[in-house]
Length: 372
Image (cartoon, rainbow, N blue to C red; front, side, top):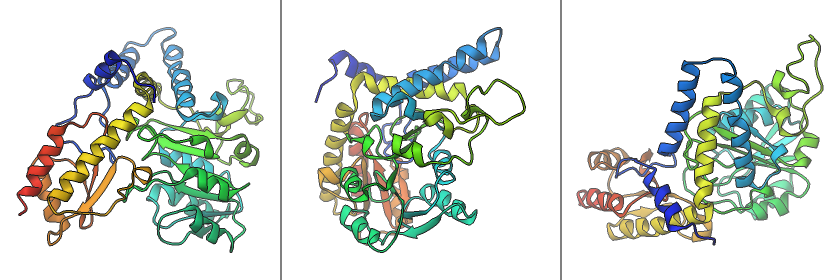
């Protein structure tokens, strides 16, 4: 792992200001001051807009896409901006035909696009069996279907389990592998180019705020996708207003519908550039260390951890329950102690980041002690 300089690491950590007990990065990652400042500067420019203001603001998209390409390993022309994971997946779902395999245990953002496209007669949906989407599970599922694509999350939203993308790529063969990367991109080291399609919103582990995200596609995917939802910015010569349809743009731009917010693009550019200043390996290592400390707290307080403990099978999410304590009560106790997390039934889902401090885990420890 290439370590950032001490100055770069210190600057990164000093740029964030979430509450001490914030352990909810799987829901939302509070952005850094650099991201807030970038958005504020863009809005300020809009407020006093003059000649060249809008054109200047739109340059933020080029910065964001360059940083996204560097982060994901995809060629710059194979990366497009999307305002959310859902928006990107809907574009892809309505550009596919044939059968798509997807688990019903996926987060709804990775289900509704396929369901809606099926309702429109664009494709068919076949379900993967319940449980983790492993290479073996995928191999068994493919034996009984003619699926041309597989949709999976890089990190499961409920359990924090990491998918074996390289293994899934091998089993998928020539089929398209569509990856919802929102719970992993920026938090774990991975070869994201194992995916034919990678979609991720920027509001969680990329810490770039709502309305930000990226969509990356392989050359194989570009050759097969027929973008039904391609809009006026997804074509060649989009500003030649001649009243006739234009050919699709080359690369991932053909998966656009319209211009998106240059304010949000400035935020994504700032967030990704800040991440690049220290590198994903450094962030991932700090997250892994905090997860170990978090697991130690939970074990000490008799909690039942329902997420994976194996380092290669987890990311920044830890889910747990406390025997004999209803989920509503558990969540309420944590909230009263100043711990921010998400409740899933009788479980609490925690998410730690590189900026999570020992004091945050001490607050969790005190909250769990109060339950006994």
